[in-house]
Image (cartoon, rainbow, N blue to C red):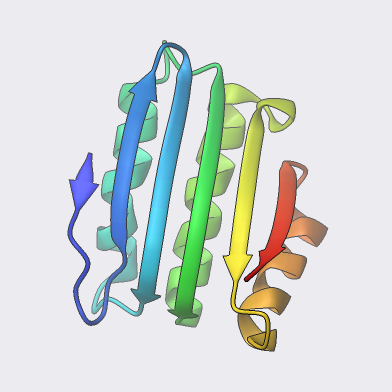
Length: 121
């Protein structure tokens, strides 16, 4: 599954290698309809449910609207339901001086049980 980056939406690349799903998300996330935008990613996870044993997210959000946060949280929860929290990893990349995006990653680590790596650059 691929989605091109726009001014308001991140680039998304989801691929499956063996039993591992890798999802790359880069850019701003304030789509007009966040639920609809992230539904494709939830659908991709569900369509590969029989195969997925591990899911890795590599994210580099520059900005996220609150509606995107909620919808991305649903994506992460879907991955956990499918592969299990011990088999899901979120690599949360953020600009070193971007406290807002860092706090989002820290908050995800408080409410989710998957492995979260906070990676400054």
